[in-house]
Amino acid sequence: MKTSMRFDLVDLRLFLFVTEAANITHGAARAGMALASASERIRLMEQSLGAPLLERHRRGVRATPAGATLVSHAQLVIQHLERMRGEYGAQLPVRQSSRSGNSCPFADLHHCSAHDLRSGEPPKTKVGGGEGNERGR
Image 1 (cartoon, rainbow, N blue to C red):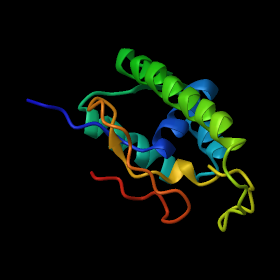
Image 2: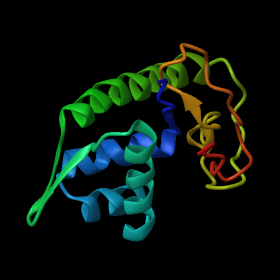
Image 3: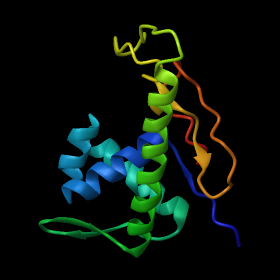
Image 4: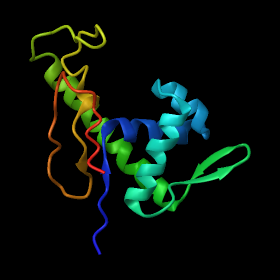
């Protein structure tokens, strides 16, 4: 049976923030997200994968083996996006983001449509527009 992993970039960044902080509340705050929203996103990620990503304890959280694998992949995805920003940043005209006032040409890239991390297909991006809630779950 094929497992469908549909995580968007907001999910990946949130998960990295949560695991770095070892705390869902602090990770959510760093992501600029309400605790309830962050918890729901993580729950949906776990449901999509069919395995727990975090061990929850009274004093925080720790990545499970599946969560540690996701951390590794999420870090690579984010690193590649940052490299892409750097490579294209000098080539593309600077535009003002309607959402954040940020002048980075990839300011809204974290609002890409969800994509299957295991498919090997490039993500379908929506630069500037939408709210990134096309979660495909």
